[in-house]
Image (tube, rainbow, N blue to C red):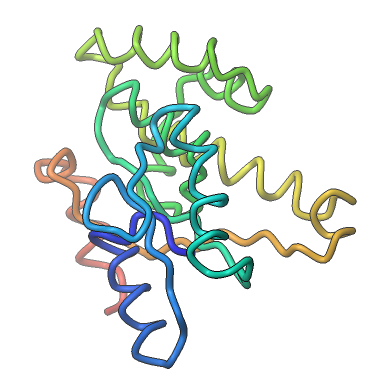
Length: 184
């Protein structure tokens, strides 16, 4: 099962897995085997049951890739509670400490409220994406060795795909210098 399968890294991952002979159940807000809105609690509860139904009860792996890079509260919902486990350059930017604390505490209502506060302030809204990516990375590092995951034989992993270009980053001189210096 691959979330975010309709575009970007999720689509490329799905295509590669299929090319290599794997059966992939795509999950996305459109153009997928399982169409759900991962920004809602209900949408996050549906994918596994729907995918299990589609696959006859066999799900060998979940690539939780769906994610947003917008300066909106919806990014909080998808990137942390929808579990986008792909980190990006956004995670290098200074976080909003209150949002980070709420996310790491697993307090979805407080996280979404803080996301809406940040979204409403143009000077702060750019902190949303990076904060969600940082919080998810910290959660994975903290949780991977726990009995509920490692003890149950379920590996957790996050992948940082490198330097991605986001519209929001187009005029950032620090990122431009980083991109020029990065290999590849």
